[in-house]
Image (cartoon, rainbow, N blue to C red; front, top):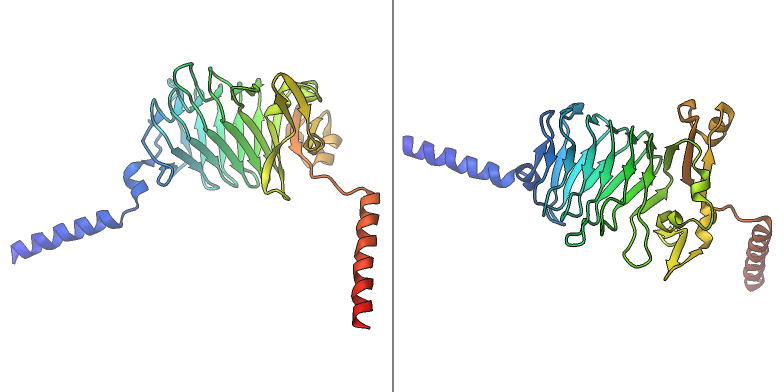
Amino acid sequence: MARLMRIHIVSLGIAFLIATPFQLLAAGVVTDTMTQLADAGSSTSPAQWWLDHDTSTPVTDIFTIGGYDRYYNYLSIDANNSFTASNGLFLGPERSSSNLLDIQAGGSVTVNGDFTVGDGTIMYYSTDNRINISGEDATLSVSGNLDMSDGYNATRNALTLTDGGKAVVGGDFSLYYHWAYGNTWLELGGGSLFLFGDKTADFVEGNGILSSIKVWDDASSSFEQVSYYDSTTLYSTPYLDWLAVDYIQDSSQAAALGYSDDYIGFTVLHDVNPVPEPASLLLFGTGLMGLLGSRLRKKR
């Protein structure tokens, strides 16, 4: 009987392990004492990290997502929790790629200090690391610099702001752009990037940083560049008109853009889908009437 009981207990233990999702074994909960998420996930089974309470990292260490030769570490912040990097944040160290900070609707991340994305070298790339901020009140706040261009060959990293997501940067914002070596991206699809001070002159037509900015196009269901390099020449595309750059000087301007007074003194980058011109609407209406007329004649 005792032997049968032991066999039964072992069988239950094995069944529990089989039933437990792989991510629970590969990663786990981020605690207040952790300084790095550096598991080894894959494209089909990333190492999933999450919070079970409002979490703050130790003040003494920079918090790092990813690790040397580590891939697919995903930290997701949902509406129930907030995450504070007390002494800076690093996403995608040398020779790592495809790491993700995902801030969902209602979730918030605060970085006291600088936030660096990608650390490539001439020998070891750091690519495809992403910050994804999506949904109402999904917010990233960085008191220092947000650097998307740290290191040689730190390419194809991206900050993506969609469906009301916001990123607020108190220091400098850097994007990497080069016609040959690839870019890091700012992708806007109904989200907003706030940069402290009047930065409107940085985003005028002809400036190289525009080649690293994309806006969402419903027609193609993809992010499209507002400008691009061909060899050493910068060319603008029609999508440049979809990029809005506004400096918020007072309450009335903030209200007109749909933002609170918290953003007075910031330059905001957001995307605007174009509205058809009256002439285009007239042509559309004329074409529609023609189709209706044709169908009526066929019925007769």
